[in-house]
Amino acid sequence: MKIMAPASALNAAMSLAAMAADKLTDTPIRILADHGAIRFCVTNPRAVISISTTAAASIQESGSATISARRFAALLSGFGTRSTINITTSDAAMTISSGNSRYRLPLLADPRAGLVINPEIARVELATADCLRLLDVVAAAGTEKTRFFLNGVHLHSDGDKLIGVGMDGTKMLRVGVVADHFSDDTRLIIPATAVKMLGKLLRVTKPETVTLRRSHAVFAASAPGFEIFSAMIDAAYPNYKQALPLPSGSSASCQRADLVAASSRLKAVAVGDLPLIMVTWVDGEPIRLFLAHEPDAGCDVVVAQTCRSARIALSLAQLTALLAEFKDDVLLIEMTDRGVIVRQGDKLGLLMSCRFIEKEIAA
Image 1 (tube, rainbow, N blue to C red):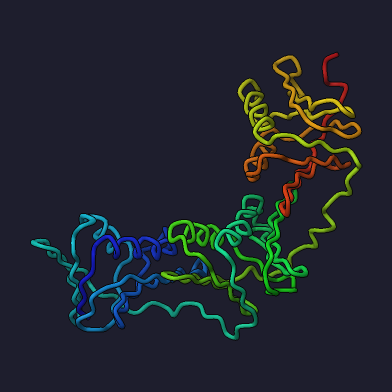
Image 2: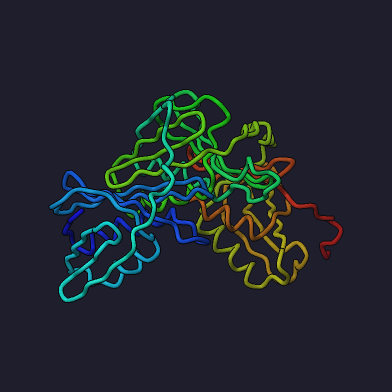
């Protein structure tokens, strides 16, 4: 193999592929050069994820080689962005040079083959913005090992929409985007690690569209410059629709920024690691918020259009995190007997209430 390419292009492609590397071991990277491009392939057997990226290069001799991903990434990052990198391989080593700088890295045995979609049972093409909306529900995904089936994002088709769901038993985020049919079963669960990697790849490369593919056990996403494969969580996703409590008819519509600001001010004066916030309103009156255990420490009022009455205790930290997942100006909050539902268009958030004895509130 003998190639020449700008350091900036190599470093950018290499850094994206290295996202799949195992942080606990020195993961090998497979480098392939052919047809005017260099391809980096990193497979993480422990996480069952593989990422491939490409960069344009001048190929004088095609070929392939395997070296240390960690050492190669560190070496490339040390060259200036305007440098030109020359790479050649012998039987035992890879030589990386630029100007008067010259380095060698030993070749490694070829790594285990990466994941493949075989057989492919579905694919769909999405606008990148829509795909990111689906992936963002990972913020509500679970982390408990005992409920591993919640530790990812569930995708499924519903009519003319593709739905993304993340939940952990206390909170849930659900969003839908218009898309062709992709999946109608409950077993398409993408691990949170792979979801976050795909989100980062899309935000860095900024493609216009991304293609999603799946088999019965593997999920893949590709766009110009990269491809990522991940094993799916081997489980059936719970029927999340059963977890949605029925609205009580009590609702409030307000400016998201006003509610976020009030929550932030209450957080600043709260005592303890897990403060509760009381959210209340009366028909036609604004929303009133105060700390459940410290009603005298601070209270706030948010202008809103309210219907009926509501009074509920919520985790202040979880409410703040949930509100951060919504971006539009106006929020619709629906009160239920078990929590609150927040809506913005096709996006829904659910936060369960916390147990609180009302008599603890000072008169």
